[in-house]
Length: 133
Image (cartoon, rainbow, N blue to C red; front, side, top):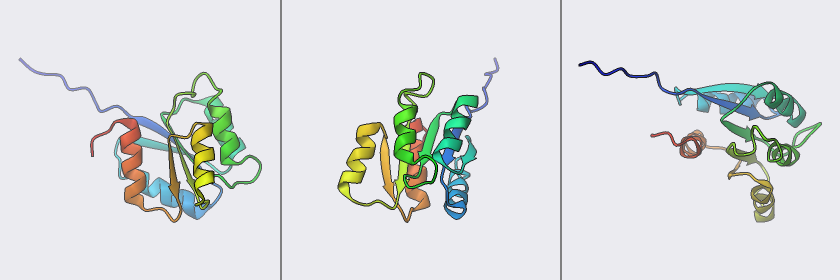
C-alpha cells in the first residue's frame, strides 16, 4: 500500500512597503519559508490594486507611505469580503503604544516595530499561517 503525499500548500503573501530596501529585506526574510510566494506593492493604493486582482493568505504593510498609508489599507481590507479574515501584520517605525493600539483596533493581527529582526517576522508569519517552524 502506498501513501500519496500531496505537495505542501503554497501561501501567497502581499508585502506593502514604500522603501525598496525594507521591501527587499522583508522579501528576503520571507524567502526562508519555502511555502511562501511573495507579491510586492510600493504603497497602499498599489497594494489595494493587487488585492483586487488576486487572493492572498497574509498581508504585511508599513504605515507611513505615500498615496495611501497602511492604516487606511488595513481598514479597506477589513471591509473586503474576499480578504476580510486575512491575517495582517503592520510593520512600522511608529513605536508609541497608541499607534500599535490604533492598528490593532482597525483589524491588524500583529504589530512589529522597525528596525525589524528577520526571525521575528518569520516567526509571526508562521504563527498566523499555522505553519510549523
